[in-house]
Length: 552
Image (cartoon, rainbow, N blue to C red; front, side, top):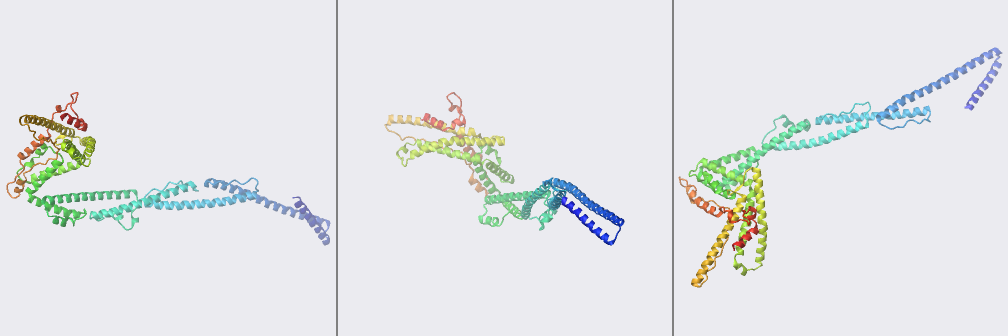
């Protein structure tokens, strides 16, 4: 700074000396030189004043720029969420102004980028919302969108894009399924919804929730119709096959029709209905043979379902002498009812059959055990095999009986009524069989005692020994077959007067069955404390074997 002042003073002195020399040469007097010096001083002052004003103005502009850019800098920094540091205090005004102005320019660029990004995202969201019929996101309206606002909008767009993919997938599946269902129902699209769905231009159909819901309902309605057609087709096929069997239609004639009928479309159902009506007419034309065939089916179902004699006799159309539509319908309904009954309780009937097989095996083992000749033919360790089989039966019979009673209990709880086997509860049915067995053992014991008495009397009189009486244990035979007058039925087809099963024949069989399965008084098998045996106790193998030893 001192050099600057010295240089300025030296410059003024040099100029002043030169001016004096010039003025002397010119010949200015003293007064004129003083006037000129005064003028020069005024000019220098004016120049210095102008220079000072210019520099002062520059300083003011810098200060103004710093103030304005500083406000913008702090505002943008806050709105954009950036963290640009404040200028250092050691910087000059010019450096501060340059620093603020540069950062404001960068921040304004970021503002433009965010605004453009927001507009782009809003356009994408709007397009997706129009396609999916959804409401746009409620992004707060701000002069400058924040990063969080943009990120929320991007997440919203990703969600809408995934929803669009899912709805398009659902739409294509429903569209394909709808087309298939209409073909199976032999229908054409007639509603505006169906036309829009099946159109080749998929963009005509908006993927709104309500539209997709309507599509699902439409598919469900047509699915239900198809399922009804399937059930109807299955029912017609089964009924036609049943009529074929009962009418004894030639197999080749059956195949000609059934091999050409496939599916469950309305046209196929119509053909099946026509065939069924034709067979129904043939059925009425062969009324007697048809009713007799139903009676034989009914007998089989009675046995399979363990229907008691009282229940069988209660079905009076079985004994009707005439062959009428009413008799035919009654037999047909009864067969269908028993088929349904058997199907609903198939597990129970299979378990009863399993128990019968184990019971018969038990009786068979007892017969072998009472056969003295087996001791002389023990080849291949047959006695050891018998013992193993006896142990297996000993463990299996109580288990199967328990499973059977549990199945029956569950069925009774579900139906709210007792489940009867040959007119008895399952516990009474099992107990009666054990009572019957023990009564038979008592009878055999008495027969052996009588045989021994006769043997002693015979030996005392004749001195000879008659052959021993070999006892046999009756097997279980619950699957009884009702007896019909088969010859009368066959003859009735060729005679005008029909012949039906008589009560006399059935009563003989019924009397035999009742004698076989009659209830034995529980007083025959008292416990030591005088109480009666329960079903579980009677059916235990140890009790079975213990009674056997007592009888012997």
